[in-house]
Each structure stands twice: as structure tokens, then as C-alpha cells.
Length: 196
Image (cartoon, rainbow, N blue to C red):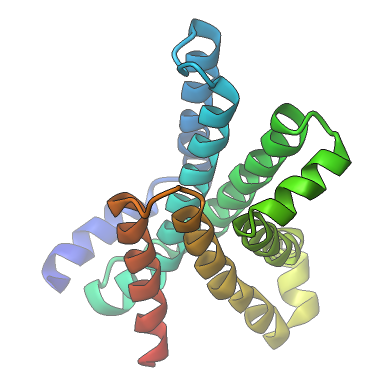
């Protein structure tokens, strides 16, 4: 496996982080296209909300997968972890913004009633709050200023990802196989860290 990882890492090193940001924006461009062309079904706001949330979950899982991939398969994607993390945060923020602005219409009383009625929203918001300091400190100046505390702070991604997985699974009226699979993936990626 390491024999494959060597040439693969060499090829991957030539991909600039900017290309990862551009690739990460393609799903958003697709959602915009579907919205413009009427391809989002009978409830486009809910569809946009769900799509943004799913993409955020995929990106969170992708970011969590980078360390195990390097450790166990020798595939080094760490160079793009910041880009993937910031993209994940961006999609989570858009997911929350669509809910607050388009779904709730910025009617805060109604939004509060929705949160009380649907506790999974609290989990999603808690996950977002945990990601905020990570996004703010995802720059070289913060890494230098915080020193070893930067790594400790960025471990907040673990509970944030777990909260996101539970939020996703709980939001449906029934537990969908896809949600259980993503929950298992996040759990497995976190368990790989516990073994260390």
C-alpha cells in the first residue's frame, strides 16, 4: 500500500490548495443552478437547507479522514485540511443562514419555537458554535500566536462532527440508512483517534 502512496503523494503535492477551494464551491454552484432552473422540487428552501447540511457533513468527515489516511495508508492530504475545514464551516454557516433567513424569514419568535419543538436544531447550532473559533483561528498567524494550544483548540472539531452527525440523523421523522451510515463513518473516524 505504501508503494502506491509514494507516487500518489507526489501527484497530490502538485495540486494547490486554491484548487481545493474551487472544487469545494462546485456543489454550491450546482445548488444555485438547480434553484435557477427549478430543479429543487416542491419545497426548494428545505431542499437547499438539506443539501448544504449534507455537504457540510461530507466535508467534516473528509477533514477527519485526513489524519487516519496519512497514518494508516500513507496518503498525505494534510496540506488541504485547512481548505476542507473552512469549506465545511462555510457550508454549515450557509445551512444555518438558509434556515434563519429563508425558512424562518428572520422571525425570531417563530425560530425559537422551532428550536424548542425540534431539539436536533440545538445540536446543529452547538456544532456550529464549536466550529466558529476553529474558522477564526485557521490562519498562520493564529497557529504562531496560540502555539500548542492551537492544536488543542482545533480538537473541538471532534464534538462538532459528532453533533453534526446526530443532528443529521435526528432531523428525519425516521432514521434513514444514509444518516446511520454517516454517523458510523464519523464514529469510526473519531474511534481511530481514541486508539492513539
